[in-house]
Length: 72
Length: 269
Image (cartoon, rainbow over all chains, first blue to last red):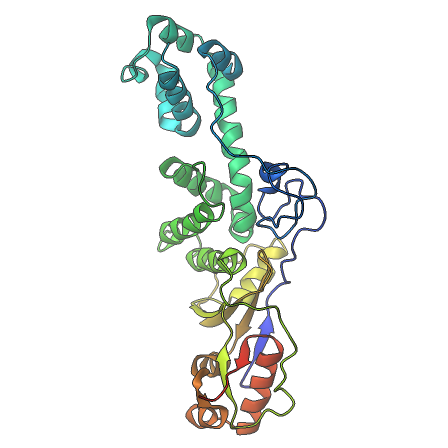
Protein backbone atom coordinates (compact mmCIF):
# COMPACT_ATOMS: atom_id res chain seq x y z
CA UNK A 1 0.00 0.00 0.00
CA UNK A 2 1.27 3.49 -0.87
CA UNK A 3 2.54 5.63 1.93
CA UNK A 4 0.55 8.49 0.39
CA UNK A 5 -2.89 7.02 0.77
CA UNK A 6 -6.08 8.96 0.00
CA UNK A 7 -9.63 7.81 -0.58
CA UNK A 8 -12.96 9.58 -0.78
CA UNK A 9 -15.48 8.96 1.99
CA UNK A 10 -19.05 8.71 0.77
CA UNK A 11 -20.38 10.52 -2.25
CA UNK A 12 -20.31 14.14 -3.31
CA UNK A 13 -23.37 15.92 -2.07
CA UNK A 14 -25.18 16.99 -5.19
CA UNK A 15 -27.31 20.10 -5.30
CA UNK A 16 -30.99 19.31 -5.28
CA UNK A 17 -32.24 18.96 -8.82
CA UNK A 18 -35.47 20.47 -10.04
CA UNK A 19 -38.14 22.09 -8.02
CA UNK A 20 -37.25 23.24 -4.54
CA UNK A 21 -40.15 21.69 -2.68
CA UNK A 22 -38.49 21.33 0.70
CA UNK A 23 -35.45 19.35 -0.38
CA UNK A 24 -33.73 17.21 2.23
CA UNK A 25 -30.52 19.20 2.06
CA UNK A 26 -31.44 22.43 3.76
CA UNK A 27 -35.22 22.47 4.07
CA UNK A 28 -35.26 26.16 3.22
CA UNK A 29 -36.65 25.90 -0.26
CA UNK A 30 -40.23 25.73 0.92
CA UNK A 31 -39.72 28.86 2.94
CA UNK A 32 -37.98 30.74 0.14
CA UNK A 33 -40.20 29.64 -2.72
CA UNK A 34 -42.06 32.51 -4.26
CA UNK A 35 -40.00 35.14 -2.49
CA UNK A 36 -37.03 35.34 -4.83
CA UNK A 37 -36.60 36.06 -8.55
CA UNK A 38 -36.56 33.17 -11.02
CA UNK A 39 -33.16 31.49 -11.20
CA UNK A 40 -31.88 32.64 -7.82
CA UNK A 41 -29.57 30.08 -6.25
CA UNK A 42 -30.90 28.64 -3.02
CA UNK A 43 -28.64 27.49 -0.19
CA UNK A 44 -29.03 23.89 -1.34
CA UNK A 45 -27.79 24.71 -4.81
CA UNK A 46 -31.16 24.51 -6.55
CA UNK A 47 -32.58 27.52 -8.34
CA UNK A 48 -35.99 29.05 -7.81
CA UNK A 49 -38.31 28.13 -10.66
CA UNK A 50 -40.80 30.93 -10.28
CA UNK A 51 -41.96 33.72 -8.06
CA UNK A 52 -41.22 37.39 -7.77
CA UNK A 53 -39.14 39.24 -5.24
CA UNK A 54 -41.11 40.75 -2.46
CA UNK A 55 -40.02 42.67 0.55
CA UNK A 56 -39.79 40.78 3.78
CA UNK A 57 -41.62 42.79 6.37
CA UNK A 58 -43.34 42.00 9.62
CA UNK A 59 -46.93 40.96 9.20
CA UNK A 60 -49.60 42.98 11.02
CA UNK A 61 -50.52 41.46 14.34
CA UNK A 62 -53.79 39.64 14.58
CA UNK A 63 -56.39 40.62 17.07
CA UNK A 64 -56.32 38.64 20.35
CA UNK A 65 -59.48 36.82 19.30
CA UNK A 66 -57.96 35.72 15.99
CA UNK A 67 -54.75 34.69 17.72
CA UNK A 68 -56.52 32.59 20.30
CA UNK A 69 -58.76 31.00 17.69
CA UNK A 70 -55.64 30.07 15.72
CA UNK A 71 -53.89 28.63 18.76
CA UNK A 72 -56.75 26.49 19.91
CA UNK B 1 -55.93 45.20 24.24
CA UNK B 2 -52.24 44.42 24.68
CA UNK B 3 -51.45 42.69 21.43
CA UNK B 4 -47.71 42.66 21.90
CA UNK B 5 -48.04 41.12 25.37
CA UNK B 6 -50.39 38.42 24.08
CA UNK B 7 -48.09 37.54 21.23
CA UNK B 8 -45.12 37.49 23.60
CA UNK B 9 -46.92 34.93 25.77
CA UNK B 10 -47.81 32.78 22.77
CA UNK B 11 -44.28 32.92 21.32
CA UNK B 12 -42.81 31.86 24.66
CA UNK B 13 -45.33 29.05 25.03
CA UNK B 14 -44.38 27.75 21.58
CA UNK B 15 -40.60 27.71 22.05
CA UNK B 16 -40.01 27.27 25.79
CA UNK B 17 -41.10 23.95 27.15
CA UNK B 18 -40.59 24.91 30.81
CA UNK B 19 -42.82 27.94 30.35
CA UNK B 20 -45.37 25.82 28.48
CA UNK B 21 -45.54 23.35 31.38
CA UNK B 22 -45.75 26.19 33.89
CA UNK B 23 -48.58 27.71 31.87
CA UNK B 24 -50.42 24.40 31.66
CA UNK B 25 -50.01 23.81 35.41
CA UNK B 26 -51.37 27.22 36.34
CA UNK B 27 -51.77 30.05 33.84
CA UNK B 28 -52.20 32.76 36.50
CA UNK B 29 -48.69 32.36 37.85
CA UNK B 30 -47.10 31.98 34.40
CA UNK B 31 -48.87 35.08 33.11
CA UNK B 32 -48.21 37.23 36.18
CA UNK B 33 -45.27 39.05 34.61
CA UNK B 34 -47.29 40.03 31.52
CA UNK B 35 -49.45 43.10 31.29
CA UNK B 36 -52.75 41.49 30.32
CA UNK B 37 -56.32 42.55 30.90
CA UNK B 38 -58.60 40.21 32.91
CA UNK B 39 -60.37 39.33 29.65
CA UNK B 40 -57.10 38.35 27.98
CA UNK B 41 -55.98 36.35 31.00
CA UNK B 42 -59.32 34.54 31.00
CA UNK B 43 -58.95 33.84 27.27
CA UNK B 44 -55.53 32.26 27.87
CA UNK B 45 -56.90 30.19 30.74
CA UNK B 46 -59.48 28.80 28.32
CA UNK B 47 -57.00 27.57 25.72
CA UNK B 48 -57.06 23.86 25.04
CA UNK B 49 -53.82 22.72 26.74
CA UNK B 50 -53.45 19.53 24.69
CA UNK B 51 -53.88 21.46 21.45
CA UNK B 52 -51.26 24.03 22.40
CA UNK B 53 -48.84 21.26 23.45
CA UNK B 54 -49.33 19.56 20.11
CA UNK B 55 -48.81 22.81 18.24
CA UNK B 56 -45.57 23.60 20.14
CA UNK B 57 -44.35 20.07 19.51
CA UNK B 58 -45.13 20.31 15.78
CA UNK B 59 -43.06 23.50 15.57
CA UNK B 60 -40.11 21.78 17.24
CA UNK B 61 -40.32 18.78 14.94
CA UNK B 62 -40.52 20.95 11.84
CA UNK B 63 -37.36 22.75 12.85
CA UNK B 64 -35.61 19.55 13.88
CA UNK B 65 -35.76 18.01 10.41
CA UNK B 66 -33.04 20.22 8.95
CA UNK B 67 -30.77 19.53 11.94
CA UNK B 68 -31.32 15.80 11.49
CA UNK B 69 -30.31 16.09 7.84
CA UNK B 70 -27.02 17.77 8.78
CA UNK B 71 -26.22 15.27 11.57
CA UNK B 72 -27.78 12.16 10.09
CA UNK B 73 -24.96 9.85 11.24
CA UNK B 74 -25.51 10.88 14.86
CA UNK B 75 -29.24 10.49 14.34
CA UNK B 76 -28.68 7.00 12.90
CA UNK B 77 -26.45 6.13 15.85
CA UNK B 78 -29.08 6.91 18.47
CA UNK B 79 -32.19 8.86 17.51
CA UNK B 80 -33.43 9.17 21.12
CA UNK B 81 -30.16 10.63 22.40
CA UNK B 82 -30.00 13.00 19.42
CA UNK B 83 -33.54 14.14 20.16
CA UNK B 84 -32.76 14.67 23.85
CA UNK B 85 -29.78 16.90 23.17
CA UNK B 86 -31.46 18.65 20.28
CA UNK B 87 -34.34 19.64 22.60
CA UNK B 88 -31.87 20.96 25.16
CA UNK B 89 -30.23 23.02 22.44
CA UNK B 90 -33.61 24.26 21.18
CA UNK B 91 -34.52 25.30 24.70
CA UNK B 92 -31.31 27.25 25.15
CA UNK B 93 -31.15 28.64 21.66
CA UNK B 94 -34.45 28.94 19.81
CA UNK B 95 -34.28 29.59 16.07
CA UNK B 96 -34.72 33.26 15.34
CA UNK B 97 -36.07 35.05 12.32
CA UNK B 98 -33.65 36.87 10.03
CA UNK B 99 -30.63 34.74 10.94
CA UNK B 100 -28.61 32.71 8.44
CA UNK B 101 -29.94 29.21 7.87
CA UNK B 102 -26.63 27.51 8.58
CA UNK B 103 -25.55 29.32 11.77
CA UNK B 104 -27.75 27.34 14.20
CA UNK B 105 -26.80 24.06 12.50
CA UNK B 106 -23.11 24.74 13.08
CA UNK B 107 -23.89 25.81 16.65
CA UNK B 108 -25.76 22.57 17.29
CA UNK B 109 -22.67 20.66 16.13
CA UNK B 110 -20.50 22.46 18.67
CA UNK B 111 -23.14 21.91 21.37
CA UNK B 112 -23.23 18.17 20.61
CA UNK B 113 -19.43 17.93 20.62
CA UNK B 114 -19.34 19.43 24.11
CA UNK B 115 -22.30 17.38 25.31
CA UNK B 116 -20.88 14.05 24.12
CA UNK B 117 -17.25 14.52 25.18
CA UNK B 118 -16.68 12.15 28.09
CA UNK B 119 -20.42 11.48 28.39
CA UNK B 120 -21.01 7.82 29.36
CA UNK B 121 -24.45 7.97 27.73
CA UNK B 122 -22.85 8.25 24.28
CA UNK B 123 -20.18 6.09 22.63
CA UNK B 124 -16.68 7.54 23.03
CA UNK B 125 -16.52 8.43 19.33
CA UNK B 126 -19.78 10.47 19.39
CA UNK B 127 -18.03 13.82 19.97
CA UNK B 128 -15.68 13.14 17.05
CA UNK B 129 -18.66 12.19 14.90
CA UNK B 130 -20.40 15.47 15.74
CA UNK B 131 -17.28 17.45 14.79
CA UNK B 132 -16.85 15.40 11.61
CA UNK B 133 -20.39 16.16 10.48
CA UNK B 134 -20.17 19.82 11.48
CA UNK B 135 -16.97 20.30 9.49
CA UNK B 136 -18.50 18.62 6.45
CA UNK B 137 -21.59 20.79 6.76
CA UNK B 138 -19.39 23.87 6.97
CA UNK B 139 -17.45 22.73 3.92
CA UNK B 140 -20.78 22.54 2.08
CA UNK B 141 -22.22 25.88 3.17
CA UNK B 142 -19.44 28.22 4.31
CA UNK B 143 -19.09 31.25 2.03
CA UNK B 144 -17.03 30.46 -1.06
CA UNK B 145 -13.99 32.71 -1.02
CA UNK B 146 -11.46 32.18 -3.79
CA UNK B 147 -12.89 28.82 -4.84
CA UNK B 148 -12.85 28.88 -8.62
CA UNK B 149 -14.68 26.39 -10.83
CA UNK B 150 -12.46 23.38 -11.37
CA UNK B 151 -10.31 23.16 -14.46
CA UNK B 152 -7.99 20.36 -15.55
CA UNK B 153 -4.62 21.21 -13.95
CA UNK B 154 -2.24 22.30 -16.70
CA UNK B 155 0.95 21.29 -14.95
CA UNK B 156 0.09 17.68 -14.16
CA UNK B 157 1.88 16.02 -17.08
CA UNK B 158 5.05 18.01 -16.68
CA UNK B 159 5.13 17.86 -12.89
CA UNK B 160 8.71 17.80 -11.63
CA UNK B 161 10.60 18.44 -8.42
CA UNK B 162 10.85 22.18 -9.10
CA UNK B 163 7.14 22.91 -9.09
CA UNK B 164 5.58 24.76 -6.16
CA UNK B 165 2.12 23.76 -5.07
CA UNK B 166 -0.38 25.26 -2.66
CA UNK B 167 -3.53 23.97 -1.01
CA UNK B 168 -6.67 25.15 -2.82
CA UNK B 169 -8.90 27.59 -0.86
CA UNK B 170 -11.74 25.73 0.83
CA UNK B 171 -9.60 22.66 1.68
CA UNK B 172 -8.81 21.82 5.30
CA UNK B 173 -7.23 18.85 7.01
CA UNK B 174 -8.48 17.75 10.43
CA UNK B 175 -7.40 15.02 12.83
CA UNK B 176 -9.80 12.66 14.56
CA UNK B 177 -9.27 10.02 17.22
CA UNK B 178 -11.34 7.39 15.42
CA UNK B 179 -11.50 5.92 11.93
CA UNK B 180 -14.22 8.17 10.54
CA UNK B 181 -14.54 6.38 7.17
CA UNK B 182 -15.22 3.06 8.93
CA UNK B 183 -17.72 4.69 11.30
CA UNK B 184 -19.57 6.41 8.47
CA UNK B 185 -19.75 3.23 6.44
CA UNK B 186 -21.12 1.25 9.39
CA UNK B 187 -23.72 3.88 10.31
CA UNK B 188 -24.90 4.15 6.71
CA UNK B 189 -25.57 0.39 6.85
CA UNK B 190 -27.64 0.92 10.01
CA UNK B 191 -25.00 -0.75 12.15
CA UNK B 192 -24.27 0.70 15.59
CA UNK B 193 -20.53 0.31 16.11
CA UNK B 194 -19.67 -0.78 19.65
CA UNK B 195 -16.35 -1.18 21.44
CA UNK B 196 -14.60 0.91 18.81
CA UNK B 197 -10.90 1.29 19.51
CA UNK B 198 -9.33 4.70 18.95
CA UNK B 199 -7.39 4.93 15.68
CA UNK B 200 -6.00 8.31 14.73
CA UNK B 201 -7.16 9.46 11.34
CA UNK B 202 -6.96 12.54 9.15
CA UNK B 203 -9.79 13.81 7.03
CA UNK B 204 -9.59 16.38 4.25
CA UNK B 205 -12.74 18.49 3.76
CA UNK B 206 -13.04 20.09 0.34
CA UNK B 207 -15.62 22.77 -0.47
CA UNK B 208 -16.67 22.62 -4.11
CA UNK B 209 -17.59 25.80 -6.03
CA UNK B 210 -21.33 25.13 -5.89
CA UNK B 211 -22.86 25.96 -2.50
CA UNK B 212 -24.14 22.76 -0.90
CA UNK B 213 -21.45 20.55 -2.43
CA UNK B 214 -18.34 19.23 -0.74
CA UNK B 215 -16.17 16.13 -0.56
CA UNK B 216 -14.26 14.44 2.20
CA UNK B 217 -11.26 12.17 1.96
CA UNK B 218 -9.48 10.06 4.52
CA UNK B 219 -5.73 10.43 4.09
CA UNK B 220 -2.62 8.84 5.56
CA UNK B 221 -0.22 10.77 7.79
CA UNK B 222 2.19 11.13 4.85
CA UNK B 223 -0.48 12.61 2.58
CA UNK B 224 -1.50 15.03 5.34
CA UNK B 225 2.19 15.91 5.77
CA UNK B 226 2.53 16.55 2.04
CA UNK B 227 -0.56 18.78 2.03
CA UNK B 228 0.63 20.77 5.05
CA UNK B 229 4.03 21.38 3.43
CA UNK B 230 2.51 22.60 0.16
CA UNK B 231 2.31 26.26 1.14
CA UNK B 232 3.62 27.67 -2.14
CA UNK B 233 7.04 28.52 -0.75
CA UNK B 234 8.84 25.20 -1.26
CA UNK B 235 9.54 23.11 -4.30
CA UNK B 236 8.25 19.55 -4.42
CA UNK B 237 11.81 18.20 -4.34
CA UNK B 238 12.47 19.96 -1.03
CA UNK B 239 9.22 18.65 0.34
CA UNK B 240 10.15 15.08 -0.64
CA UNK B 241 13.43 15.50 1.24
CA UNK B 242 11.72 16.85 4.34
CA UNK B 243 9.31 13.90 4.25
CA UNK B 244 12.24 11.51 3.73
CA UNK B 245 10.20 10.00 0.92
CA UNK B 246 10.95 8.66 -2.54
CA UNK B 247 10.71 11.71 -4.88
CA UNK B 248 8.84 9.62 -7.47
CA UNK B 249 6.19 8.67 -4.92
CA UNK B 250 5.83 12.31 -3.86
CA UNK B 251 5.37 13.43 -7.49
CA UNK B 252 2.78 10.72 -8.01
CA UNK B 253 0.91 11.70 -4.84
CA UNK B 254 1.08 15.39 -5.74
CA UNK B 255 -0.30 14.64 -9.21
CA UNK B 256 -3.23 12.82 -7.63
CA UNK B 257 -3.92 15.71 -5.25
CA UNK B 258 -3.80 18.10 -8.23
CA UNK B 259 -6.27 15.92 -10.14
CA UNK B 260 -8.64 15.93 -7.15
CA UNK B 261 -8.44 19.72 -6.95
CA UNK B 262 -6.89 19.70 -3.47
CA UNK B 263 -3.63 21.30 -4.65
CA UNK B 264 -2.93 23.93 -7.26
CA UNK B 265 0.23 25.19 -8.90
CA UNK B 266 1.68 28.36 -7.44
CA UNK B 267 3.66 30.65 -9.72
CA UNK B 268 7.27 31.17 -8.59
CA UNK B 269 7.81 34.55 -6.91
